[in-house]
Image 1 (cartoon, rainbow, N blue to C red):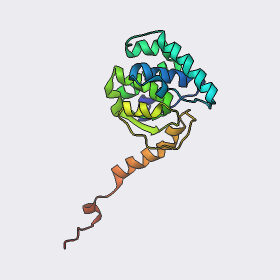
Image 2 (cartoon, rainbow, N blue to C red):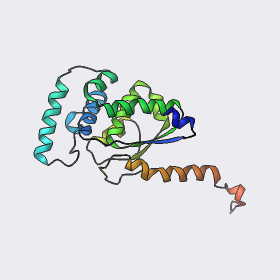
Image 3 (spheres, one colour):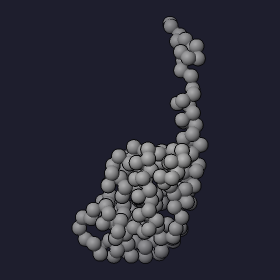
Image 4 (tube, helix red, strand yellow):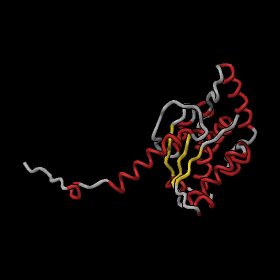
Length: 192
C-alpha cells in the first residue's frame, strides 16, 4: 500500500476473491453491527433454499460460540478470514496515505466495517462502488452511512464494482477541476 502511494497512486480499489467469505462477512455484520443474523446471511455463490437454511444454522452456532459483546478485533479474530483481516489493515493504510478508496461489495465492506470501528476517519476516504445483491450488504451500507454509486445486481466481488466505478470517479474529478463556471464560460444570468 505504502509503496503504491509512494509511487504516486492516489486511488485504490478493494474487492475480494474467495469462497466462504460471505459467511465471515455475515458474522462480522451480525456481531459488530448488531444486525440480526437472519438479515445478515445471504445465498453467497447461489445457494438454494435448503443450502441457505443450512448456512444460517451453521452461522448461528458459530455466533453462539462467543456470546456477549465483542470488540472489532475480537470479532475479526473469531469470524474473519485472512483476506478480510488483510483488507481491514489495507483500508487503514490507504486512508493514512490519503488515498481515495473504492469499496466493492459485501466482503470488502465487512473489512471496512472492522476498520471503521477502529478508526472512523477511514470512511472519509471511501467511495462505495457497488451495492451487492448479497442480503446483508444493504444493511452494512446503511451502518456505514454510505450510498453506493451503482446497484447492478452483481454478485461477482473480485473488485468488479470498483473497476466499473473508477471511470465515474475519474470523470467527477475532471468535472470538478476543469468544468468552467458560468462566469468563466461567459454565460450571463437572464434578468426578467
